[in-house]
Image (cartoon, rainbow, N blue to C red; front, top):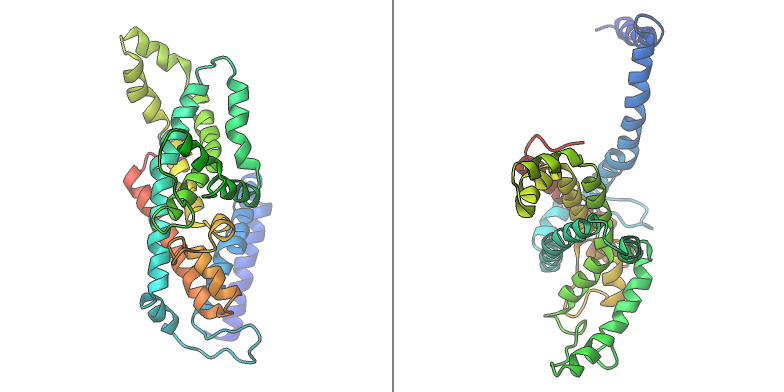
Length: 312
């Protein structure tokens, strides 16, 4: 193809784009571009370009102050597979995420169901449960570090009062990760509760009235009316909780600094340590790429598991 033909083709496409805005169904076309283009721009700026940039850096031996960045291909990924600390971080992150999905989501749903019954003091309890969500992670982590303190912490004091043995919550490799997960559930549960509560408010009362007329008891109304109509909300909560749990970092940094013996290392914490303490940006970018692919793959798997009828 000659240069003149290529230029003509580009000009034709531009003319088609402009004509789509000005002739025919001009209002419809303009609205379509106005809706789609900002989303494409945000997707490219927030997701696509950073991912491609991280993938490019991961293929190089990249140090911030180095004059050159030699191309190393997939060496960083091979090193990642052979790195025992990365596998520890991956297992810890998976366990932490599983704990949040198993405990956070059902408890949040239960609280939303209680608050949706319009009992006395509903507004107060809603505000009290949601308050930790808007509190800084650093502040919450420091407060819970004091609660977990083995000498003067509130938790061990309560256990001692009822005659139970006291534990080194954050100093033992057996309990440190579970302690961080418990604190995270306490802080995050209010967010999921509000999402569930909004979903419950959107279910028409007519459906419950029809179910009552048909003789459905409270459990049957929950089983056959509430749960199916909450399916899109539940799917959204699962995705948000999964992404949130894979980003765990601040509480690990403040409460345990990854210890003891790597028992609370997570992928994001290891990424930060490799990139901003050891300044191995290429290796850290490989960790970031793997983390993105893991979250993306799990999200797609959840979408396929929940079915095509999930959506907003």
